[in-house]
Image (cartoon, rainbow, N blue to C red):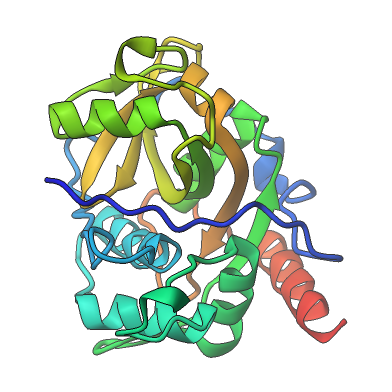
Length: 262
């Protein structure tokens, strides 16, 4: 598949934005591996081969992945994703000059207030930010919340290798065989962390992007990542018992309310 688009603008930290650090769930040690090869998260492309709507697509695929973990699925189409992209960023369909991508925290704030509108209903996340370089935190978010919503800086070598192999590759940080390895030389992209084979630099992480699962090493992710956020969908639950409840949910909701009303 050609025409993979990016669309994540540089990471921004807003005053008082919600954080996951103080939640009880974040004090645990992450599982040594997160094997989800038996579960199909069914990520969709949703127009991200034509426009830079990856911040919207990331939310849609987070909903779908969370649903898959619960044994069902949520329908999303291109129009849903493009409508949310337009509303959350100012993109105007048919006006290429307005296709400027999105700032993840702004998109998340919009989603909390206005919801992600689908035929099955409107879905309102609550969210919090984690330290992007805290591997245990990233792994815990995947294990507990289903996915971790990431902003990464892709290199031209990353894009060239994915294109050459149609994604059938494991991205590593310094593979110069495909061109410039400088993080950000291709641009910023929003995608989801979904699974991992272990927690060392050479172990792999499964990322949901461009309608597929792209394998990368933790070393690659450490060199490319610029932000990480956890999403809770109050309308969804997980059967594994790890989805946060009680004090964690109450604390995160309070942070979200305070952030919106500050």
